[in-house]
Length: 245
Image (cartoon, rainbow, N blue to C red; front, side, top):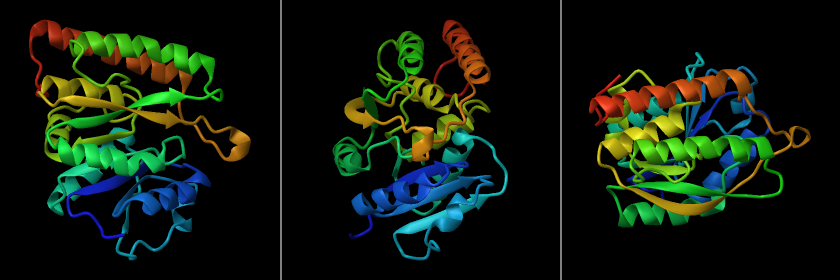
């Protein structure tokens, strides 16, 4: 597969366990290049990957765990410097559909100013508490973006135009951990980046299958609530556009 000169797959990874290897392999089967941004992993999962000198795979390791948003920002900044214009971000734990990468990249090539946002199709493996709980974030982001943002702000399978992504993230110290996906969806909408939504399957992988979740139900839901209060306040003050704290 000829590597793209404009679009890459970016996989942030923090202790994803045994599924990182198969996730990276599936991504490489569908696209080139693939970059893995290791975010302070201590489980050795990235050590099972090829050396990263294969031409279509690059691995960057940050010894500190700074959060998903911080890892995406670091990878996006590196990609911009390397001449790329877009990145498809997908999770390292096998939840996102690698077989849809080409379709999302093609949509991005036809609509380069837009963010191509996955709209999740849940199977019977999806925990009810997670699918019901995300409805609040869907409602809040719809209000915060006046219906112009990602239709599911918590689903992180997206192709981002790199320049506005780096600009809006660099303009705030927020959105660095589990709040990254909804925060950046709102800020990109405020910055005038259109969101094109496409269906994509979402898997919830059981622990006995190697599934790993670092989501802390109380801590991270409180973080989400605080984020929405802050974004509503910024919207009320009229300081949108990706430049507010």
